[in-house]
Image (cartoon, rainbow, N blue to C red):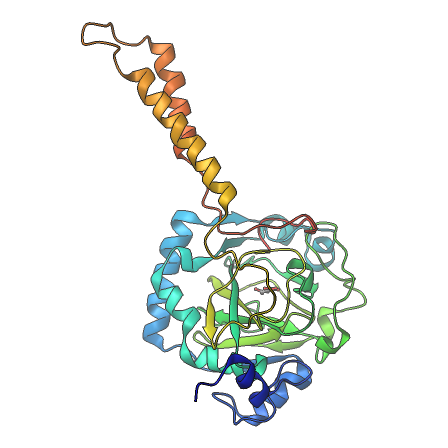
Length: 352
Ligand SMILES: O=C(O)CCC(=O)C(=O)O
């Protein structure tokens, strides 16, 4: 007999935060599942071997070198509260979205069996990958993060969404490790200050009250989309590179924000049929029109270079420049791996 997705869902059952209740866990212990549900975060040690981390690290360095943006980190009035003026000036964060579009080792990391089985233990049998975001804190002045939930960046209907922080480098207290307000996921989504990057009132949700979660290279730290978290400056003389990998139960509908409208890869189980609405896995038809226009512009530009007849004089210099620029514009475009923010998106920086 073939088990349907619905039957599998019923068999395994979901708890308040998506934890499976009936079937034996696939990868986590019962204690780990209970810990996540109680505290809203969980550290998994050694998910990736030293060899895997070496490859991920090398390919990440290549991608950073060639594609990433370097900046001062998240913006907003909280910066003056969490940093001295010198630290504020010198802080460094390198960010990048969707590493799997750039490096195959990272695609494999996103699909890593122990990782996705652990996620299935918490989210249920159907697990959909949603996004990847790099946060590389520079040495000595690696940018801190204010206390916040991830909900405002990519709001979803409920809490069945887990961010998995893959540590390429270890991070301890001085190295800018993650910090969590214990049990705060149970507060549900909170209203954030949207001045600069979304953040909470730092005097109410204090980083001093948070539990530090140091981790080694190869470890993964899970937390809920509703868990309040942040991190301090990286004061160590080396980079602290982590990748945030977002996974959800596909039954949990996204409301706005990063990656809205982009179906994710199923990394465990099968996609439930949620409605009669067609899943747009084929690409955006509107883009086809844009591509047609660019190809037509390229054709036109090429024709303006082509001599009308073998005897015709060469095109004048000015026309050549114009034509070159047009052709260049037609061919050069930033790789938009970020997805469609949709009409209700809350404005934030590109480096979230
Ligand atoms: O990388 C960090 O230290 C914090 C990351 C974070 O706050 C996030 O990914 O939402």
